[in-house]
Image (cartoon, rainbow, N blue to C red; front, side, top):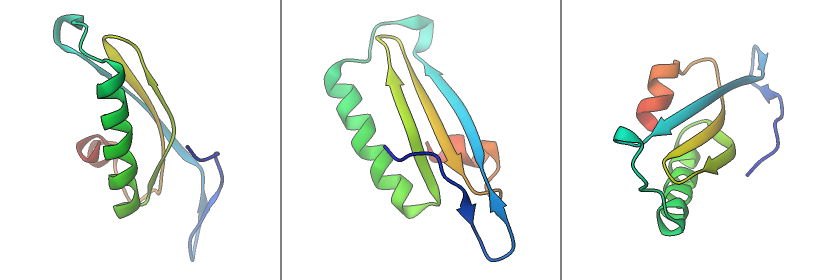
Length: 83
């Protein structure tokens, strides 16, 4: 995971962070170590295509936390859809 940094564009500098929590339906235990590894691999692959970086990914047995840094051109809805 990358450290938080300023994103420099041609006309702005930004530090925009979002915390996204994804829970399993009825808080069932579904996140195993294997699922955690797959989610991390998929996220890192999709973050390269978009201007997103995931600073932290935390998992528990029934939910996942993502700390995402983005550019201001993406709305929070677009970021969650991408995730």
